[in-house]
Image 1 (cartoon, rainbow, N blue to C red):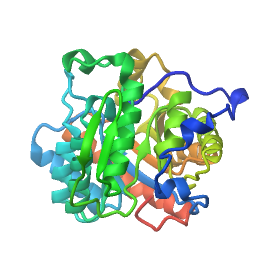
Image 2 (cartoon, rainbow, N blue to C red):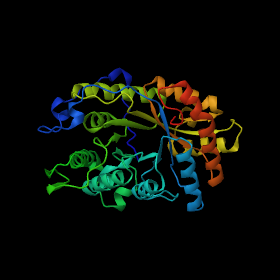
Image 3 (spheres, rainbow, N blue to C red):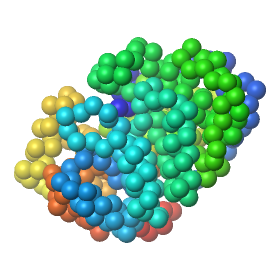
Length: 355
């Protein structure tokens, strides 16, 4: 449920950033606020689920084992609480994946922060990071204004931006070990703290969304940015805006902490599965799936990924367009056997097997 409005146009970048707004925390020592140098980027490929296509739990775990053993970098869940289609609750799913696996990282693209209690969210993330020995990749967003969850949970959708900003500050400061007293419009805390703290000294905070507000939010709180289903050109525009906003804030986000998400399917244009995916996506979003998905053989999929790399993205959530257990397994196996080796050869900074 990533924010998907008001994409920053190229001619307006970099837009002016209010320095007072960006200077968070005013008296703190957030390590990302102090960082002015970045790490070199590496290319890596994770795999994501939009829906839960498996008929039985054993099919899901068979797929998870394939990702773990096949060298996929990370597994990503979707955050939806109300849906006619089957979707797992994301935090519960991450905890289960943590117990099943030993190597692979995992996250959510993205958690609708404004729908969740920030103290509980901070505690859940810290617990999963501890039990997985530092493999959590939390991604946060504002949530779609059209999501049915707002009414179901008796929340005002018009305040989701401010609730998100307050929640991100609370989560960040609790992760740093603060004993936090906080007086916000939507959240108030007195001497709140959590323990144990995350294993990762800087637990990643990937922010989603492509609006100007999302850009400012990423520059202020984020350690990375994860796009939803956007074109390579849009991804490049938003990344440029985030970099400019981070400079205004006196911060730097690592060059390899910019991500993109796209669906993929091995098959020709005549493949019924491809045609069905294009029709379904276009009906749901009003977008042309051919500009947002990667279809064809391994060469075509890697070339599509390369367009995002050219626009400064380097971490990828690849979503199999599949129907049922066996189709999902087959599409993922082809990714592992044909795409990941090509990516490792083309972008050798990434170790073979991690994309």
